[in-house]
Length: 231
Image 1 (cartoon, rainbow, N blue to C red):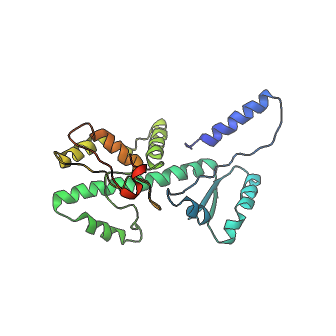
Image 2 (cartoon, rainbow, N blue to C red):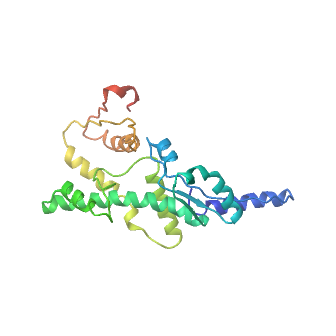
Image 3 (cartoon, rainbow, N blue to C red):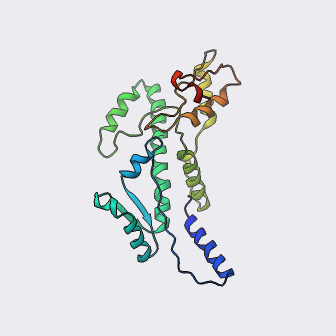
């Protein structure tokens, strides 16, 4: 949910209670999820961390009791204020999306200077401060969370007078780049189905295909064992 949602939810509840002339003591907390598509159950049972935003000790004690089994296994439980918890979710996804976008720019530069982006990726990924994940260049990021979370964070930033230029995807340049490579070629969209432990490329692939299918290319999605699920 966008940053500030919990505050709005609390205001709506308080307004309704006032209309009903009732006094009910309640709490609002933020408990964002960090689950990957294809590995949601594993991520839920063995989380990297659990982030909880609360406004009172009472709410904190309730959430501590809820997550007590996880604490027994030494999982990291981070309590913070609600806006920080909401921001953590969006900042995390935006950071990962930014890494992908950055590597795409590095890949383009490597093409121009004669460098091998795969070697560059391994070289910088070996740095423990950076790590090797989300450093693979490609046609961009997709999935159910990255695009909407990046847009939501960018909108929130604009509302407060901050312009995150790195969040804006140059879709037109992407389309031109694909068209340049695939002129007069048969374009196959392979592996468009859902794969375990991966963010499904189906959504992103279908968007790209829809943009080019009416141009010079014939599209033919294909993966035999999942043919019925292909677009």
